[in-house]
Image 1: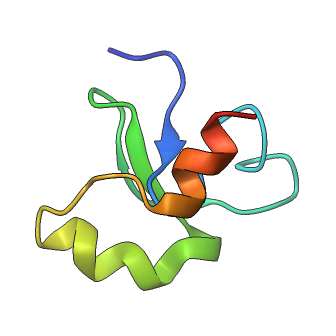
Image 2: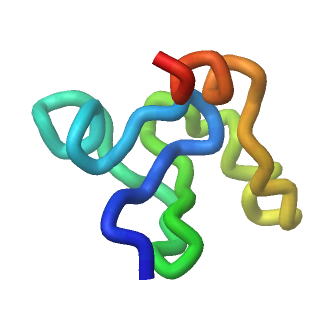
Length: 64
């Protein structure tokens, strides 16, 4: 199990963005370490259809 989960839409994670007064998880797979945060709700249908790859925005943010 991964200790930190990342949003596939924007790249925010448990210890930055989610839960610190910002967004919250609306989809989450702790084992995979991936989810969709409330700010990226538009990615929920992708998630539900099995498309759980990072968006371009998330990839850029993960490099920071």
